[in-house]
Image 1 (tube, rainbow, N blue to C red):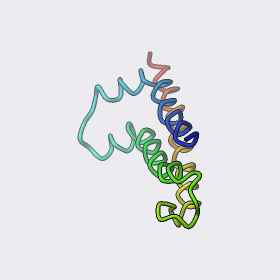
Image 2: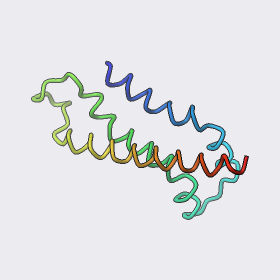
Image 3: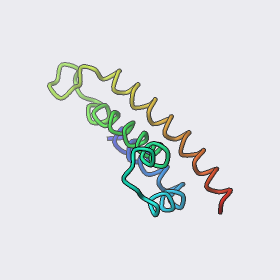
Image 4: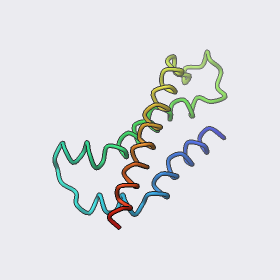
Length: 102
């Protein structure tokens, strides 16, 4: 249960801290690959990292022989942490650049 709560806090924290910058980025939304990579990249990395960590959080406390226990649990956790941290660093940098303009 605490793993899911931690995951929810990790999901809410960047969006709560940087919601103004995200709102401004979404105001100028365009359907282009360049926009998705440059403007939405940090947020997509954060969501991707949380997606990789979700099966790990769900399987916390389960017996390793259980059907619901992912066999590649360590790999999912590592990919989740790496993507989340990369997204968090890029979101901080994006907010820093946004704050100069506002």
